[in-house]
Amino acid sequence: MYKFKYIIPMVMALLIFLLLFQSCYSVRLRSVDGIYNSTAPIVRDDYYRDMEVIELDTVITIGATTKDFTLLIKTTDKCPTGELHTVEYRSTLGAVLLSAVTFGRKRKVKIKYVCIKS
Image 1: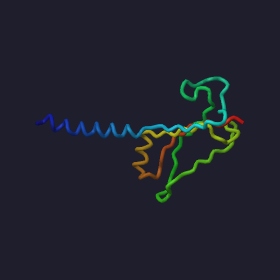
Image 2 (image 1 turned 180 degrees about the vertical axis):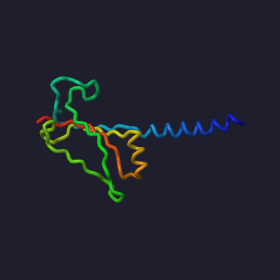
Image 3 (image 1 turned 90 degrees about the horizontal axis):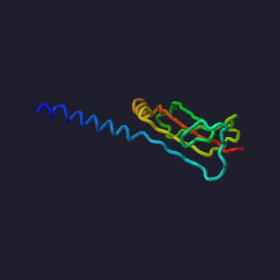
Image 4 (image 1 turned 90 degrees about the vertical axis):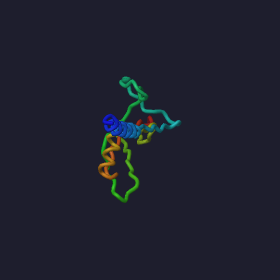
């Protein structure tokens, strides 16, 4: 009888843990038109191996009544045109937990994007 006393909470904790890991995902949007901005030396070994990637890792604050957020991409030295070729949005377990603790007001955002060559 004592075994069941400990097994049931452990199984429940394991199920909750597995459900939280399902909240980690990545979404990538890519344009079929245009040529991406390439880097001179190839320094990456992933999907973006010959692209010049700009990475943003920030926490955004959204009000209780606001339903959307706009991130403006400006022209910089790395992105001279301001036009996007590839965008990847990543949600992690830490981001989901931060959103849950702050009731959705703060969200951790990881974004990678590649600009179109000028």
